[in-house]
Each structure stands twice: as C-alpha cells, then as structure tokens.
Length: 166
Picture 1 (spheres, rainbow, N blue to C red):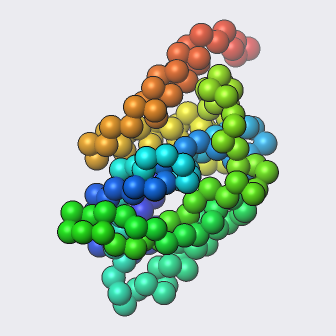
Picture 2: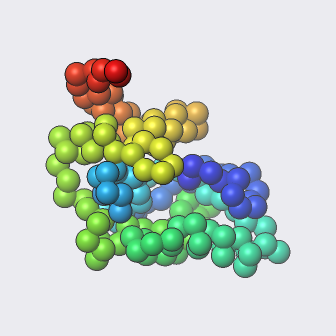
C-alpha cells in the first residue's frame, strides 16, 4: 500500500499470505500503464498487515473501501494471513478477472514497454514500480520479479532515443 497513513492503524505487521501471489495487470489508464495488484494464483507473498483498532473498524473500513473499490477491478475478500503471533483473517482486495481491463496475459515485453511509457494523474508507472521495489527493500522483502522488472524497465528507457526539447 503506497499511502498507509490514509487510515488509522496500529503499527503494520509483517505477514505471509499463502494463497494470493503478487501479479501485474493492466489498469484503466488510457496510457496503458500497469499497476501492481494481488491476484489469486501461485505460492503466496510476503507483505504487511494493518491492524485497525476495534473502535475504528467501521470508519476505517469505509475509508479503505472508498480507496480500493473506486472502480471495477477488485473483489473484496477475507483471506488467512500468517502473522508472527499466528494466523488471522484479513480483508484484502483481489484482482477481478471478470473485468476486461484486468489482464494477466500481457507478455513480458509489453509489460516492460507499458511500465516504461505509462503515466497517469498520480505519476508514471515506472515511479510506481520503483516505489514498490523501494518499499520491499526497506521492509527486507525480496521480490525478484519486481526488482528484475524494474531493471528491465530502466534498460528499456535507457535504450530509447533521447527527445530533444526545442
């Protein structure tokens, strides 16, 4: 989550989800940007869980809902995640493959090109991916897929002719 301070929570907790795996999908952006998303496929992923204080659950869940269900693309789901003190049920938002813009079939070459060139009102897809890799590094999470993808995006950008500003 790029901006966890948008809602009230206790300090985040390291977690391991044994069902969904991190995956990329195409967003609703006309610039063909890509976004990182949770998807049901594979061996799971490392991440953070945010424990919301009991007195704030209703209000904070509404904030999360408005943030994550802003447009079609997610299915809210309760899943098991493993914390240091044991398993808990957690609310997450899983990619909805019934939505035409949620694509898991984009080949790696196009993923690199879309991320290298995509931009939206919040920034570029490359900046988004770099932010994810930086957060993972800071948290001690090794996600070779994201790190390798960022390196490929940077190589792609470096290989493109420089635009002249007249």
